[in-house]
Amino acid sequence: MKKFLVERNIPDLGKNSEDEFQNPDSHVEWKESIVTADKVFCVYEAENEEAVRVHVMQGNLPVNRISEIKTVLTPESEHMRFRVPDIEKPIDRLLT
Image (tube, rainbow, N blue to C red):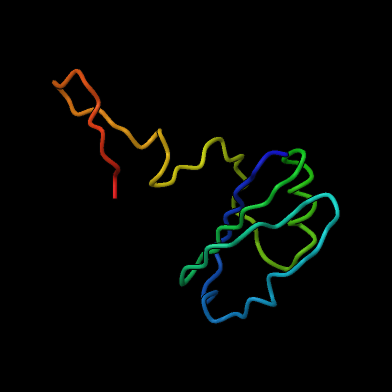
């Protein structure tokens, strides 16, 4: 399964309850949502973007963008190593 991020711009969204975001579907699995004052970023697992699009369009919330998630970085991720200009070796420390 691939992961997709759905971005929605919704004024006053932070005032809504968690129950308002529940929408079960057998082909698309909602994993989590990050809610700000005026946006919500929802993570879904699905076979493809079209399945996510059909699922989210059934709700009463706007959809601004759907993006496939290619990589998830965490503090424990090997990808969190970075290079500083003019230094040949990567710095072995985590970004915080």
